[in-house]
Amino acid sequence: MRTDSCQAFISLSPGESADSAPSSRGGRAAVLAAALIRPVRPVRPVGPVRPVWWSEQWIPFAYDGVGDLQCIDLDPPEGGKVGQVVTYWHDRGEREHVADSLNEWLAHLADDLEAGKYSRAGNSC
Image (cartoon, rainbow, N blue to C red; front, side, top):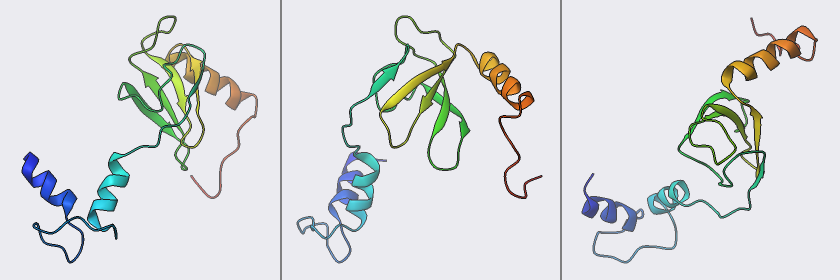
């Protein structure tokens, strides 16, 4: 997409023309801004995890249905391991190292299943 097209899109709200000033009413510009702008929040790493809200080097592989993720970390800080598993909480600042690898994470899950720490949810198959 061209830069001038992006600028025209951002500057428009319903009922506006490309020549008018952006409206404070929101519209498409507010939707786009909400998608592009993230609030600055404090992050507390637990273990060898980068102190960032989100990293493009975290590959989600497990989702709890409300926004929290388990991710494979492809760019850990010093002391971490490429491929380690970290948590991403959508509404909290903790970023926690939970396993050194996906295999280790799966082994912990298998142990927890065998120990009866989980039960089947709802009417799922």
